[in-house]
Length: 171
Ligand SMILES: [Zn+2]
Ligand SMILES: [Zn+2]
Image 1 (spheres, rainbow, N blue to C red):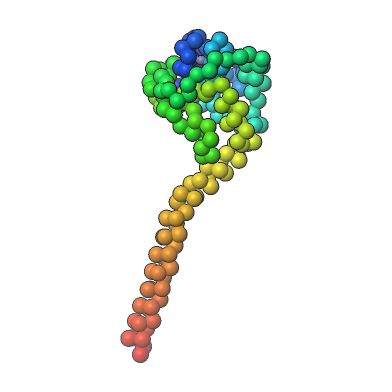
Image 2: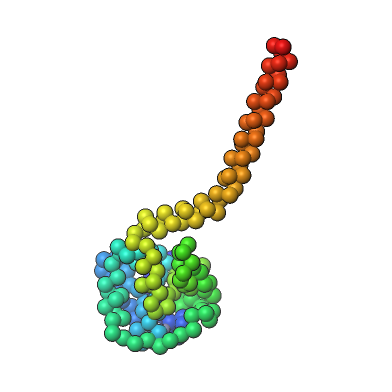
């Protein structure tokens, strides 16, 4: 799904969100400037902003010096673009910050302050990918060890049988 151009309502506090244009990426992000300070990213937009080496100057300028209403981040939320129930997920394998994701249109909602926390986790996309690979390896590592063990046992069995056959054939 592509970018939304409608005025959408904040999934956390229902206030109308403000579109903030980010020229470096050529996209609009929706920020709840009159309410809770939450940010909604359309499908695929979020990856332009989630690491330290990416520019969020426009977002920082938009929220600078403002005070925002507190909202309960644990409440279920509805996607402001497509109306689907959003799902709470950790933003990375570090499991430190939970964000709301829409599996239907791919939108993501971050409470005020969460973007900074997420960006503090990784400097670059490469660092993020390396951490994901480590997590994957840790998870499947146990299985790989088991397979290697089995493989070693098979090899031992095969060499034992070969010796046995050699003995039967050549005496
Ligand atoms: Zn809000
Ligand atoms: Zn959606």
